[in-house]
Image (cartoon, rainbow, N blue to C red; front, side):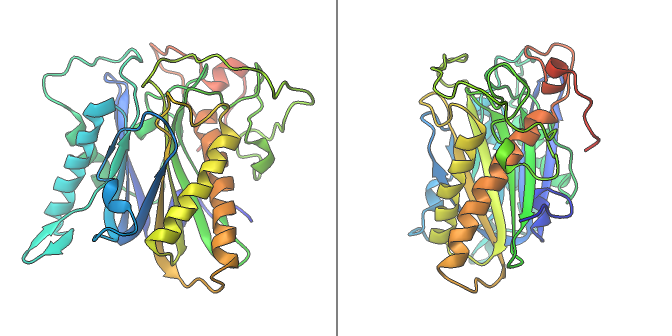
Length: 335
């Protein structure tokens, strides 16, 4: 397993990510879109999710493919970002065909960033506009950290962010992850700079610090946020051809990566969920071994993406939490 050329979810060919944020609002939107509709599934393990159109991602539903996926800040207000993406896709003539009409299918999920110090006194919900702008900005290369849905994110005691990572497997299949890290738990061990995801790090992508020699893995954490203020939203994607049911199994396995990278995770106060995407570009050669490997790879890639998102967060005036770089005095590489 090695990183893809960009070490981003867009190493899965045919996928693009667009990000848009409002500095005054301290919030943003991230959109995943493809050259064509893609198979998608979802699995929710957090106790406080906020979602749109996720019921249609069950394997027994009529629609098996979607046009885009949205991750947004703004709590319930952020769900309107999906409407902006729907409008943008409709203008492109994309969507599920119903006679002469095309209806873009755009599931989404939101995180809570309403108490991060930004100006939330809008007269009109801004998220539809940000969603459409994020769609228009979609490309293969994008920054990490304080961008898109991760712009106003926070963790237990460090500023959160938008992360991504990828892996190319020995069988040629590519797996990638995109994640907005706004967790109740911590991505670092104790009071130090080391990331819980360190055992799965590739090529020093978040500092190469490893794990500390000693740490109290049995420590009892205290929640630092209140009910509804936390969520980690993720998308894992592959070019392997999967059914919706197989994609759902990949999403379930990917949650292991969230648990490896955030301690604690999947709490009653988090809305943790994972979307899974298949572009179907590569045939699954072994129906047993390949899905098995895909689940493992998705978990590894998601753990890495979570650490990268926090590692890359940038300090801004008015921050309520320190960034990883500010707290530990490290110089970050360019992303």
